[in-house]
Image (cartoon, rainbow, N blue to C red; front, side, top):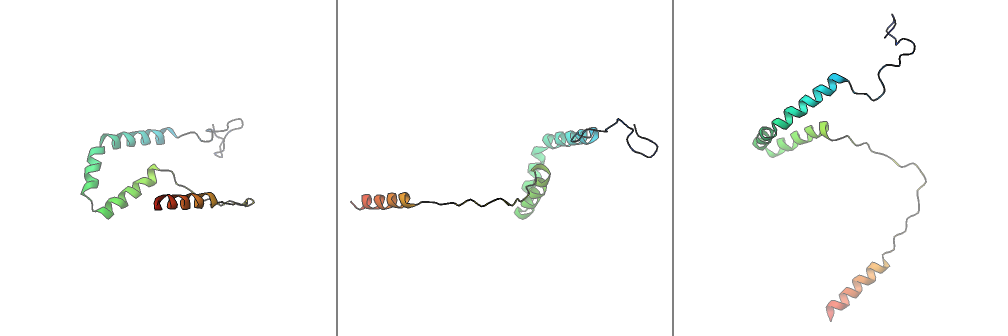
Amino acid sequence: MRDDKGRFAEGNEGRPKGSVNKSSNEIRETFQLLLSNNLEKIQDDLNELEAKDRIQMLLSLANYILPKLRSTEYTGEQPEITIDFSESINQVEWDKTKDEK
């Protein structure tokens, strides 16, 4: 319930954080059903497009399907990294001498 100013009444915390709106969920499920029932037609339509238009369409659709990735920056202490290639180089040299015989 809300009070006369539109605020939640005392003791009412409202909808829990992260809960899904029922109508949004129904629309999402209906749209997924529509797409899955028309996959063959959608594929035919995509095949009729020019290559650049087909790629552009797939990238546009990916925005709605794949999660967006955010760039991150490591701000902690940078560890010292040492890479030793000496064993790899010795193996390559051994392989060369083996091939020469």
